[in-house]
Length: 251
Length: 72
Image (cartoon, rainbow over all chains, first blue to last red; front, side):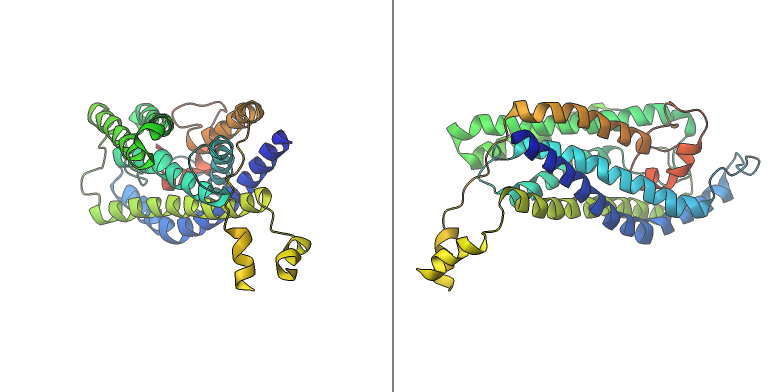
């Protein structure tokens, strides 16, 4: 019975992730792609090394449509599945929240822990920004920051739960959030800085690109929270049947 | 009608906790599967390669930039 519930939530999480991925894809295509296009224009005008000699493996037309869709949708399904699994642990354990509210709360925390916190240290970069020789280091740092942020968010939640019986929910939450912010601040201070923006790269373009990247994640997680919350609510709290509604109406 | 409906909704019940033992096997197997998917979207043929060539990298190139992963 419980295992079936976990399976049902997981399937719904992946479906909600796919749905949220579609919304994120629209934002990515409408707001993001023009910036990618401009950045590639800059890259081609200023690149020291020429891409022209290499045969183009995947055309720009495919990269910006089918390729983009593949990446964003698979990303949505994968994070949807992971969030649904986290939801199975969180449900009924994080406070007095129903199925829908727990889903939205979890999505908000996931947006912060999985994306915003790593983004503030290692923001998204358009093509032309970033030295290909340092890709190994930058990838390792980005995933490290993401892992650290998620683990610390879980630790902060457990800390809050420990404190809550003694200090009450308000102070337990405040202390947990402060502890999270302090350790993240230390990580920001001690992890190496990456700044590989080429000279004369338009600042406005970099700003717009990063804003659109943030908008994609905001759409993804808000969409996921609402969709998954709705599906979880229907699974865990089925709407009263006609006969159940008939009882108060008849009294 | 409204006063009749107010009664049953007045007592919110917390959702039941799912036992950790029931969640754990799903979390392990599907957690790893989802992380493998993320790896292919976010890092394959960038920092490390499982498959030779640059086909995967080129195909998800735009998504990788816009989703915030270091691409190249």
